[in-house]
Length: 210
Image (cartoon, rainbow, N blue to C red):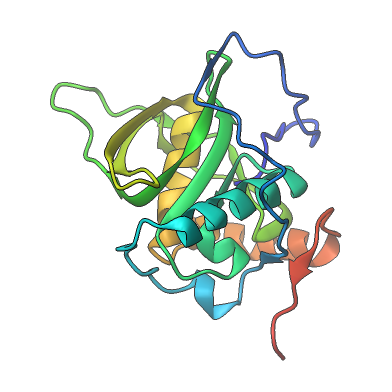
C-alpha cells in the first residue's frame, strides 16, 4: 500500500516520530529491491497460492519484500506485487495513534469483526504501489484483525486500527487477487487509472506486455 496522502492538499504526510513501535525492523542488508508489478499484470488479478514450505527461500523472499517496499516508499507490500505467486505480505505502517507496526504475515485471513464491536467506516484516501501516483477515497472498516503464520510457521494474529487497519485489508485483498480500485465505482476507478496514466512512479515497475 502507498503511504498516507492528504486528499485536500494532495501532499504526502511526513512520517512523525512514532510513539511506540510494535515489531522489529528488518535487516535491510539481506534483501534486494525488485520492481513493482502494476495493474494489468495477471499475477495481480488472481488469488495467490497458499504457502506450505517455511524455509530459507521464504525468509529470503520476505527480506526482498521489505527492501522493495522501502525502495518504493510504501507501507505495505504483497508478494504478487513483485511478481511472486504466494500468500505473503509485509508492512511497516502507522496507525492513527502514531504507533508504528512492522512485520509480515503468511497465508493471511481477514477475520470477521468481533461480536459486539460496532462497524465504523473510515472513508479516507487509499493508494497502491501497483497503481502508482493514484489515490481515491475508499470506505473501509477502521478496525481489522488478520490471522496467519510467521516465516517459521507459527500462528499469529495481527490487530489494527485506523490507517493500519486499512493496510491489513488492502494487502489481504492483494493476495486474493483484488486491487483497491476493484472496490471503487466505475467513475472513481476510471479517475484512478487516469491519475496513474498521467503520473510518473518514483520507483521501478514491471512493464505490462502489450
